Amino acid sequence: MARWNGFWTRRTDVQRVELYTKVSLYVLVWWVGASVVVFRPEALAPVRTALLLSVVVVVTALAATVGLRVAMAQVRPRLDDPAVRRATAANVVAALVALGLGLALPQDDRDLVVTVVAGTVAWGVGAVRGRAAVAIGPVLLVGGTLVLFGAGGSPAAVAWLGVYAFFVFTLRSSLWLLAVVRELDQTRRAQGRLAIAEERLRFSRDVHDVLGRHLSTIAVQAELASRLAERGDERAAATMLEVRAAAHEALREARALARGYRPVDLTTELEGARSLLRSAGIAWHEDLDDLPPRWREPVGWVVREAVTNVLRHSTATRVAVRWERDTEGVGGVGGVGGVGGAGSLVVRNDGARPADPAHAGTGLLGLGERLAPAGATLTTARSDDDFVLRVDFPADTAAGRGEEPA
Image (cartoon, rainbow, N blue to C red):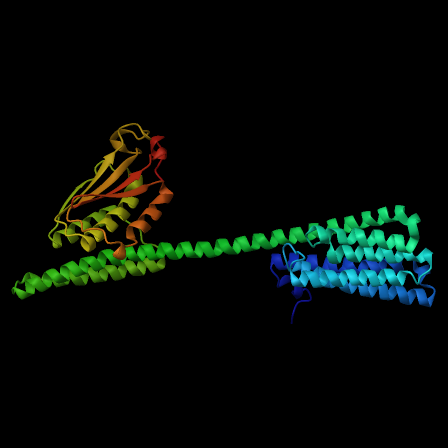
């Protein structure tokens, strides 16, 4: 069985604000006409007067309801919009009809007509932007007052203009608040979509890191195994076992990646790099003794991507990785051995192929974006056939104060 307040509880907060605003404004539109009965019931005693006032209330309130509905559907309604222009014209015609009917009433009751017109025109046209739209209400009220009461009605026209201005202020404030709520909701939704896009990008980078390295390993070892097999070398079988082990390791890391917990261990990355490059006949040298603990995981990312690029985009015979500690005091809070200090990771290899923009990969670009939140910057350079990848890391200020690195 549905709950009695299900129409409210099943809505979101934004939908509740919209419902509350719309109902409140629609009620106010019709309340202006109903107030005639509440505050001046004696004016309805003559049947003719009651009928004329009923027509005035219904015609102007209907026109104001249409204008209000159009205004609430837009953030800043303007006359150049066809729907707004039609609704505004309907309100002007309704106001003119009401003022014309007011001429058929006794002069003592004509103020009721002007009060209804002031309220309904404010609700129906008050939200429309532009000088022409702003002038509609005052022109109708002043003109109608002069027609119904003559020059002696000027003081009353000022009072009705005050009522009109108050209603317009109330309407615009309500619609402004509704627009702010809608914009905040759109911003929240956009942030949600952005978070999803960032997570997809992170996942694609991790997939690139995992499969890129392992597929490179499998390709190199499979090629080595095929050459050994051609020569009848017994080491071919052992090499194929290494290929199988690499495939199983890739599968394990892919599953861990799908579950969302695949830590990057620098020691493991270095061991994998040495083994992979050794299989490809590439010499490996590393000097990472002064590497701060804080940067071990990011350096693992760099090593993985660099080794993958060496195998895919070079004919390298040697690769050197070293940590250059900042000794010039730029972020020199790091104490002994560079722990907590700024520094740079430099990966250099020979055999660099000429750059080919048509086949440029996204690995280094993604790596740079991944390092950026940590304050690190990635640059590359070529010198003859050498390719140098350099990552500058900022100072580890937490370690420099004797705190545990994050």
